[in-house]
Length: 376
Ligand SMILES: [Zn+2]
Ligand SMILES: [Zn+2]
Image (cartoon, rainbow, N blue to C red; front, side, top):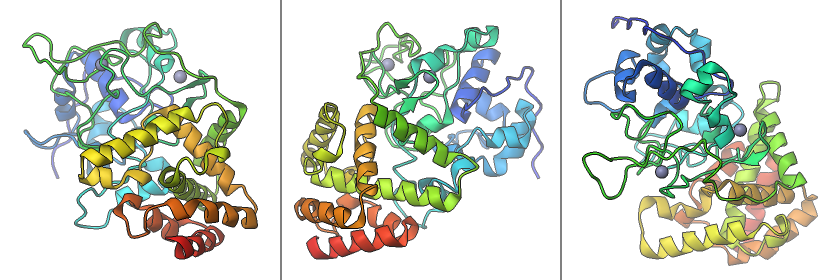
């Protein structure tokens, strides 16, 4: 067994809801180390030259003991920095933890995105001395696309940097890294870590503060139904919820979201009025990009969540409305929507049907499969 690392000279207690990227950013800021140096000192990076994969968001695995020792956390505290505690209730996590072998992209798009959402006010911190110095939490659940509202600050999450306009913590490939530009130290945890397009030796990253409200574009009001849906979703992720109930509901949302996106704007009347423009924009973008690029990610487009929290909220609200219909009404809705969708065999559906088969309730599976058999 390899030797455990020395404890770091200073520790930081995890903030409520904080994830591994957030704690490592705050710790490296406190210790004046680059994130890469911190990964090496805490056992997250096991060999020189290897990179620290986004897979650590799922679970720390055999690195947990070393990381907990170095950061002076209990193993339970260290495990809570990952998505592992939600794996029983949210099937995309368990399916990513146990992927089928030889897949080009073994992780699920409803966990591993090429972006991170965030709440500027959470990043600003609560005013305590430690949060004034090193910022507030980057929360682990912001990595789940089903989280679109910050309930503490009653605002939609943001998805882009107001200066460089790219996604916050953008990755070329979803899940490839734990943090972007991790060899670079000296950035505050709330600064944008995106690489600049016109590279110069002195300026390699954007560096805009994501915790400043001044530069943030305005957002729509949160409607009562979106607020209720976000509360329902966080209740389902709660440890007290029956895992089967939660995993069935999340699967239903995913299947209905795929059908809504594939047939948009057919299901517009199931989504909240006045807000569906954000989803129009998302679906238009998908269609444009699919025409330009034929790579793997684009072929999975109906199964992927929108980057925008507002567009995702609208999509999931429409999906929840469909799921709440009585069976005859649901069958009728599917009957009118599905004829305009691509064939069932199309790769554009991603893992939609696999999730339906493995994790949906028998009733939902029967209803959707019957409709798919008739129309696709
Ligand atoms: Zn917040
Ligand atoms: Zn930026």
